[in-house]
Image (cartoon, rainbow, N blue to C red; front, top):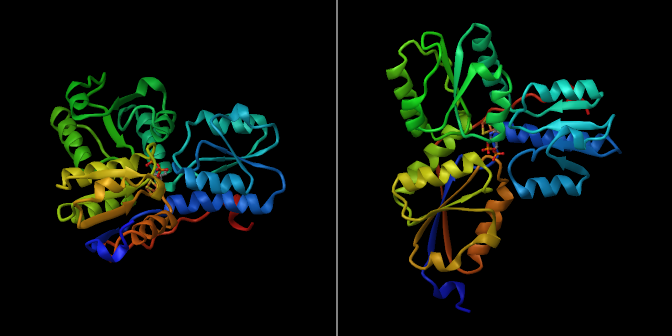
Length: 319
Ligand code: 2E7
Ligand code: F3S
């Protein structure tokens, strides 16, 4: 094997902010606090956040991950994932007498409330988001089905045919591409000038910051690695943003085990970022794997500083 020092040095540019957001921090803390305070298993409905490493870490401490409430035994404690749930889920948990703790990100809850309020006012709601994603399933489940239309693309926005164009509102998934969503909203506003929108963007600060940070480095990097899971919407958007910003090789990796060493051949400047569900230890593990093969010069390119922290739900605050 070639010694690290014989290879040309590799500049690594770490985008900042990257990795865990305030909503993920809160969700993981909720599960950890419950685990520490109970001897019985803690059930979690859906991956608490979309990251295998995080899920396996919590499983090792006693969490049991399920997809639906019917897999949770009567009387057990259950946590709803950070992505949010349809209204029917807490209702069913209550009916079953489960001790439910809601780890839905407060910024998703805000979208839920907005959708419910608009529907109550008699509006039809256009939800901009990706079909089947748990956040979209959760937001759809806040309003009667006939009140909601899902728009995934600019083409959908051109084609959507609401029954009440004069009583119309839109909300969005929180992890979408900022640029693509702006384009979709512009189409909706052109076609339905009376459409109402949220006062503040539904795409969250963490998504916005991570996209801006990777965009700022992508054009000057030969490759960008986004650390995150294939089912992580915000992580996948980071790969797309990096590619659109001019990086010739933007890819998603879950951790050091997925590094394609051959692809690093012609790379002298490598950008690294991480999705909102990817812990910093995975970034460190990727850096350690790189350092074992190449001499590294590591820089950080900070776009913004995040200081927001969300309050924990009352049920776990004093545990
Ligand atoms: C909750 C929400 O778990 P993630 O990868 O989720 P996405 O939605 O990106 O697939 O990331 C954290 C997170 C982001 N948004 C959790 Cl609503
Ligand atoms: Fe919440 Fe945004 Fe994170 S919606 S969970 S702060 S990516």
